[in-house]
Amino acid sequence: MDILELLTTRRSIRKYTDKEVSEEIVDSLLRAGMYAPSAGNQQPWHFMIIRDKSTFERINKFHPYSKMLLEANVAILVCADTSIETHKGYWPVDCSAATENILIAAHGLGLGAVWLGIYPRQERIDGIRKLFHLPDTIFPLSLISIGYPAEQKQKPERFIAARIHYEKW
Image (tube, rainbow, N blue to C red; front, side, top):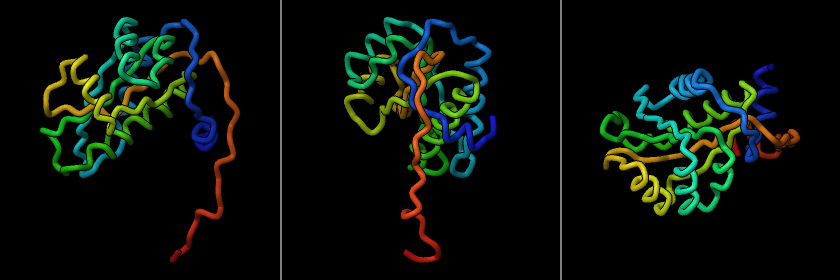
């Protein structure tokens, strides 16, 4: 698929088939995430693979927008390790770039995925910290719900020429 077509047709997919996402594909998604740009190339990310349906149910109790996990085959939790940060305060940007790379790679591999925000919602951060026993230096940014799509969405028109400025406002 052409790269611009890939970017403009990627949509948040919340309904999945029961087809299993292979470990090889999960590995490809993780590699895509790790090739994201980061401030000073600090790469502060860590990734947790989640497949346990009971864990998805537990997440659903404290994350109000996580219902699609109940149908997902796999999820990837994207976290930052502030103990290895060399450019303080950039971890949300870096981990967001990794999250977006994973979303784009998932679409390119024929999967459906959606970004579930954890950070900056304290109740979600606390829920994830407690559930996964995260160390104090590890901050959860996002949870990506992934599966083979059981829905298709149309490409929206999002180009807004009025929001483009040249040289000055």
